[in-house]
Length: 261
Image 1: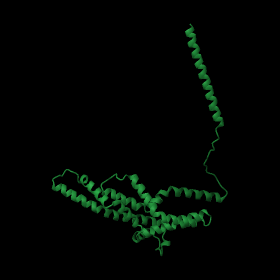
Image 2: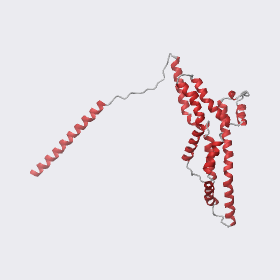
Image 3: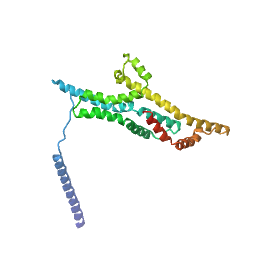
Image 4: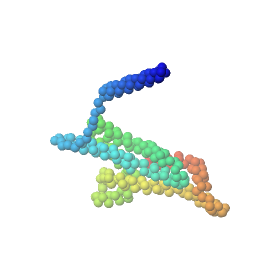
């Protein structure tokens, strides 16, 4: 009997401790909830405004958000990025290394080379457009013109006259007398196709030595009667060896940067 009573007392003692612990935990949670700071709520709605300035500010904010959403496309299509990434893609295909270097490395290298090439133009845009606008020296419209001017200068230097004339004729616009008369929306597509054409020309020059290696390896295998052995498997080490011996990355990057000057 004494053993049963001892066990019962132990069980009751444990239950009491659990009850006290649960009550303490409840009080702690309640205290934290009461001491928690109030979180502000944000609501978006559509209403009427009697002040035209409020509407103009809202439209400007919408325009800024639109420009920010299009920033990646503007970075790609109005800079040297297109030519660089296409040429590196041609090099990878010519070497027959489909995934080496990986896409992430190709994009990162193209971006940093783009930053290097475009740094002088972006510096002019910041000095003549962004900083004076932040200091209140010029208006927003003048700031946009000053920012766009270095970019237009870069695109005009890299755009062929035939490509520019194509889009001027397609737009049914009057023949421009100077570069200032050419719309930016006409200049950008002309610049893009000019960049693609230049990149394809560089890619053709890259392919020639590697095609020669493929032809030599293929003819050698055929003369040895090894018809079933893929020539690409044999020519790949020789392509990589040739590319390393001539310091291919140095030549490629140097040629790409010099092509923009």
